[in-house]
View 1: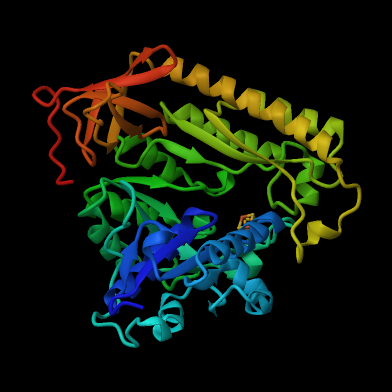
View 2: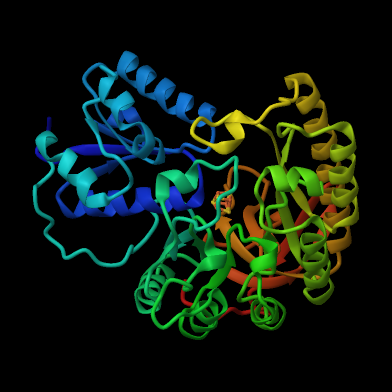
Length: 434
Ligand code: SF4
């Protein structure tokens, strides 16, 4: 082991987990560790696990075994949601050298102290300063969830909703904005942000402050449609794109009965009405949803209701998942399992509708203006242009003098099925210091 241990990180799961990994990396770097970008350059691997399905647990175990096979000398430390629920299972694995139940960066750093990481940090723990990879900075505003959806083990692993104080969030957002032109508000259930704080505040209060005090485009990650208040809709509509016009609103099912089995708190109609209302006020709007198909008890008639709702609502993309059993959830003991081939066919059907809606939305955006963040400067050896992301969550190519990290507005044009923009500096200067 060298004096400065090199650590490779791997994250499974959601954006909140990616944020947690960045906190671990920052803590370890403050204690003398270096970051490796491939396992072959590392002496220690930190695996941040996810437990959203049994498959997610299995994927973590598979990676751990593969790393041990390919690199017998690598020290492997495992943390995250899966270890929070199954600590003993990971301790029993001969391939692991350390196990931390949960995501606490101090505990992860402690677990690495026997592999050359200093026992104490040289810096006082401060806000996350940057994500080591990527143009977007993850800004975690809360952890945990107070809902009790019957299929979800994440809340079991992470506990009740706990919000970070707004001043702490703003300080971190300012630090991240020095490196990232876009910040993504993440958490496990961001719609409940602030409800546990004293004084009680809301996500729209926090967003109002972020938009006023932080020089970056702000994007909301997944948020429940029924928890988006009118002020937040106003910010989406009126902030000139600084609050990205993009919502990812989990739908899970379009059947009243299946929503009940899922123990969702809203009705089909409440979801439908709110999504239509918001889409009528915010234009353009990138609109995505998660849908679980083949949930126990889902009949052809229930699926038809979901398909009808998907067809009606103005989605621009969909994430469709066939239901997968998760131990320690209420849904795991529900009767009337749907055969795998039926769930796969339902999933294919909805995904195809999602793709068609995406194509139609991209075509409709041609000729209109977009708020663009360049993610990667163009490779001079190709003519592919730079890759970029619009506020309404379209991946596009940019030609001209586009540098990674720049944000600007420009009209979109469609070439084949590819949306493109030109970076015309002289015409459209952008003043943000990114
Ligand atoms: S709202 Fe439901 S699915 Fe989302 S984290 Fe909470 S319990 Fe899980």
